[in-house]
Image (tube, rainbow, N blue to C red; front, top):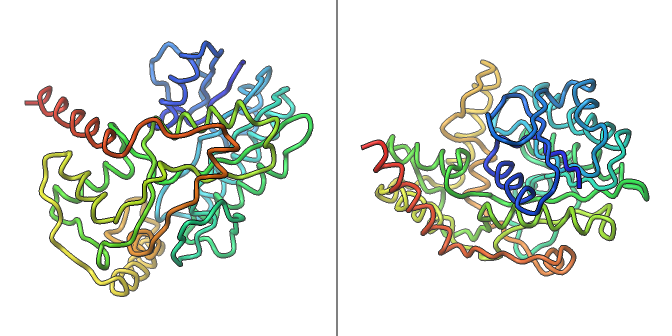
Length: 327
């Protein structure tokens, strides 16, 4: 297949591209900055409809990963990239002849702040989703699935907390805060949460591409299916980096209230960096969110191949390798 991958500079995007190329697919990436790889690149922004049209012309399939990610930020920037950008890619893909479209969404589109325990892929709800990222991704998922048709099958996949060697989001932020002595456990740290090793997430996206003609119009949450207490996940990440587990504890309600105050300050100042806490982050760290994977695995004909334990071994090896190179 001639497959276009948007947002291929992310950890998950790079892993998806590598997997597609290993299968012999004809891959093109659409992104804002060159990566100097052997993959055919088209540079541009998903907010630019003309650039998207050039990229999508002649494609058989699209995996749409490009998104603005962040716990705070100016709404118009999330709107432009996540909502209008997704609309541009959907329209371009349909006009360009694509018959399969995988939209990479997020479980946060159906998270209203309460615990999610053993649930499936609930409907995306921009009215109850928490924060500009989640709300914009909820709108984007609706826009993508609305384009599902007999001519172009659209599937939404929501990988949950993707991590692995080289991850700058979950792993990078946890390790950075641990090194600064600013990493805290919210609440008791006992809330069970799912996560997804990056290779498994990439496998699931490609499986969704293969199965799109028979599952079009549906959303699926993807995870390792191995929920763990949040404290255990945080500790394993910092230990893999050779650091001591955090000792600071912050009560859940205090973290959430402090996060609300920080959000208002950051919004007022239109800052682009992350505050020490947000209400969304407090909810993610202080409430359970793990998912029933039975329908996902059956519908995608997919299952994880890398366990959490193996993932942490690989993560530790990656940190050790980096340390040897820099020392």
